[in-house]
Image 1 (cartoon, rainbow, N blue to C red):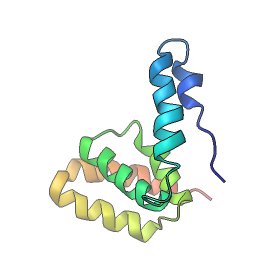
Image 2: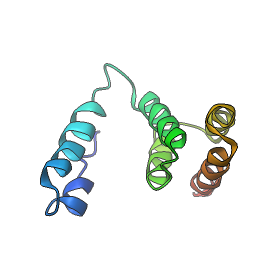
Image 3: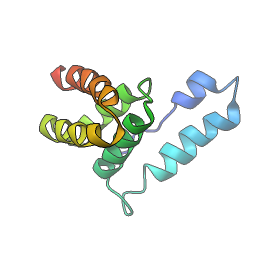
Image 4: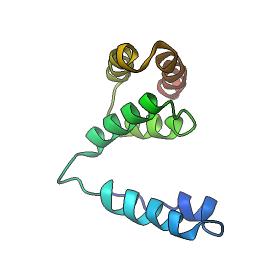
Length: 107
């Protein structure tokens, strides 16, 4: 069952309604919901990789939690971050590991 995303409207709806629409209805409502093109699991891996690569650590905890819900194991996320360390930088990997460790330690 797909969860309807409302974070855009809740956090930015009054300030940036068009952005909130794109976030909630297009990005999450259409792109993330399109399981025929890519599974949610694959989208999670791609999104986490992109965020680590960009150093976008403010958004990373949410997407790590989503990745865990979408079936990414602790071993897999560890392997992904280790692989990325050699391409996107050791500091990015350390930051990502600190966040991933928190997410995969949660019950």
